[in-house]
Image 1: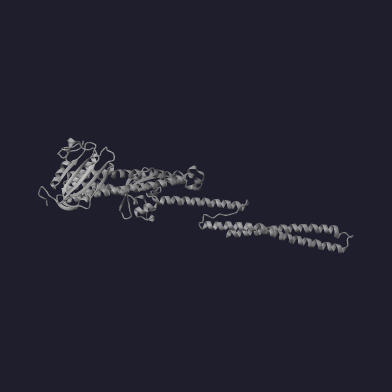
Image 2: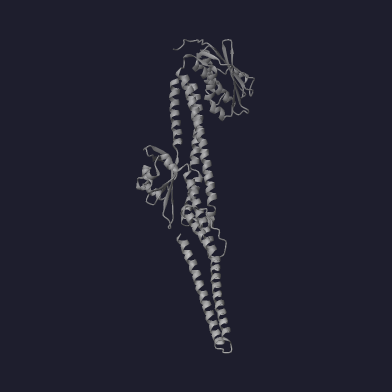
Amino acid sequence: MFMEHKSYITIRNTILVAFVLLSSFLGIFTSTISQYFIKNFLNNEQIPQEAVNQLLVKIIAVGTGTTLLGVILVILIAVKITGPLAHSIKQLTAAMLEVDKGNWNIKVSINDNTELGIMALTFNKMVQSLNETSVSKNYLDNILSSMRDMLIVLDSEGLIKSVNQATTYNLGWDEADVLGRPLSVLSGEFKSSEAWDFLLEGKVRQKEIMLIKKDKELFPVLFSASLMGNEHLENVIVCTAADISEKNKAEKIKEEMQKKLVEVSREAGMSEVATGVLHNVGNVLNSINISIGEIKRRLKNASLNDFFKVMEVVYTAQNDWVGFIQNHEQGRMFFPVLLAISEEMKKEQQEVGLEFMELEKYVENIKNIVYIQQSVAKKGGMIEKFNINEIISQAISINKNALIRHEIEVVEENAQEIVVETDRLKVIQVLINLITNAKDALKGMENKKIHVVVRKQDQMIKVMVKDNGIGISEDQLNKIFLYGHTTKKDGHGFGLHNSALAAKEIGGQLEVKSEGEKKGAEFVFTFPCQHRSLHKDRG
């Protein structure tokens, strides 16, 4: 309003000055005419007095009319000139008020070469630059707030200057609780002067530490810190912390599973089954190790290092952000590079998420294997009713990971639900050995397949396990179930021998068929629906 009022005063003064100048001109003009008239007419006795009077009246009328006409022309010219001028000033004033309210999209439309036109052009450029700066800052803030990893910025005194949303979310602190406080409030790792020196030197890279949550619970992270700044800017330390709690949980589960498997195998007294279980669990644990290694690799990804470099550029250019973005080569590349880094970080986040899903599947597989092992071990030697199809599925499940790893297709041809009453432990012991044996026979073969078929004939159950593997020569068929006989380089000859004994103990038998080498083999496990033991049942 002050600027608008001032402009009106200027316009008014301009009009008054013009009016005074015109009046002065007319005064001089009238004076000159009067002198001329007096000199040439009034002092001339030859001219009649009446004619002189008439001429004098005409001169006065002309002078008065000319003066009035000049005043009117001055007013009209002033209005013509100052009207657009006042409108332009009003435009500029209104635009400034809009900018003051936070509207950065305002634009003044004054298209001329006057001072006001130049002022409007300068104003528009200034608002555009401020708008770009505001958008750039908001864009950067959005990227930082959407980071999966925690971000903590420290000043040169070691006090927390800012944190991102991931930090407050994971640790439970409010932003106001930690700002202005030392890093030691979030981690006891940096209470010593030596640790602080490492931070100042920017030497902390991928270090596993514990952060302290608001409820005092410890939160495991992979911590890195980088010193940023130069002689013209204040030094800051940018710290990132990646959540590794899931990785630690997976490792803990792995350790617990290994301990549990050892205990279960010892208590069950099933050397062959325990060996198979441990072997297959070992395969699963290897997969877990691979996933954990992949997660570690991705946590140490290059995009995070690129992010540090971008942050260094942002920090050093903060005093002339607009000029840097518009004029500097690195500045013009800033947003494309930052966008590429954010896309890469998003991709890495998705890939790590998939790895964690794989870990969950592996852990679930181990749990199922352990559950099966516990269920059969707990009731080993006891006669009970169970569905034979369920036992077959459990035996396949124990070997599942190895079968997948060796790309072996298992086809089950189960009959209707068949309930039997016999020693569950011995049945699953035989089935696990037969499936493991078929798997081993398929090494080096193509189109690997195992068929498991169940049939009930009268009161007998037949489970046939057939493979298209290396086959068995005729001279080996009669020796296959003998104690200590094996065709494997690392075999002991216990598996099939013990399986044959187990089948015999529940009133059944184990047979083998093969048409020769490289023609596959079929093992047939036959046992009665009702238990008929050759020995006294154990209670």
